[in-house]
Image (cartoon, rainbow, N blue to C red):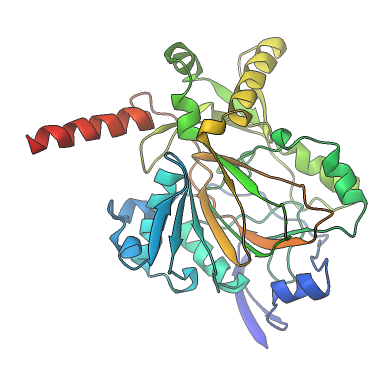
Length: 366
């Protein structure tokens, strides 16, 4: 059938059968393409965050859901009874705001396919087309997640590394990194394959006041060297030159106004203005703070056809590669991009803002 697809490079028409990625992953295995084409540099854009139109009560989501519950006190909410393929614009706005506040939102038993997911992702911002990763034929905005037990080199690579080295927020080496990310897993191993998220808000709040003050105003360099190395190791063509970007170490979220820590071992390489030893010492401390922060982390056990929607501006995450002897794990990721990270000195921490609002509400009741 003829399918018209809008990509970051314009509107194109291609002749191919609509892909069923779940069936491909189960029947064919590795189906991704790695085109040897050059992508132009990314251009700056003004991000219009739909979360600004979100309802603080999230009524369009919560009133329509069968069940809504939080997974930890500071991070993660699960919603049952709503299909992402059928969201209204107001529900999309409320979802953006909810993800900004709770970090990550989970929806189980979802029927949304990859084409619908691409269209949903566009609502939240321009979709990132990755420099190196494999994608389904005709869908360059999609990152295919596919690992299984059949390639002996895959477990060999991951088993030589610790999961705490893989903490990251998506594509922070870009000048305007990811805002929301949508990930659907439609094939999961019977055991293992969890993902861990951590709250950047709470990571900031759990630092001492002197450390918070020291970090505010510092900047860090982010690069995509890990992706370049992987591409070279696997003989994959690099379709766009990687760039280095400088971002604040503490970031202000545009929707909540809350401060969050914005460094991670995946892409953050050095602190601007510090010498090598000072930078390494500080980053190692912050990376251990994130990886060891079990009191602001969430470990999620996937079930087939679950979708996670998270806000990269206020979370970190890492996948657990412990399932190679168990089976196959497949899904697809859509990555809308957002504003260039910034820090506002007058912004508040999550704890401070919520405490002040609670005190105000208490006063109003008297």
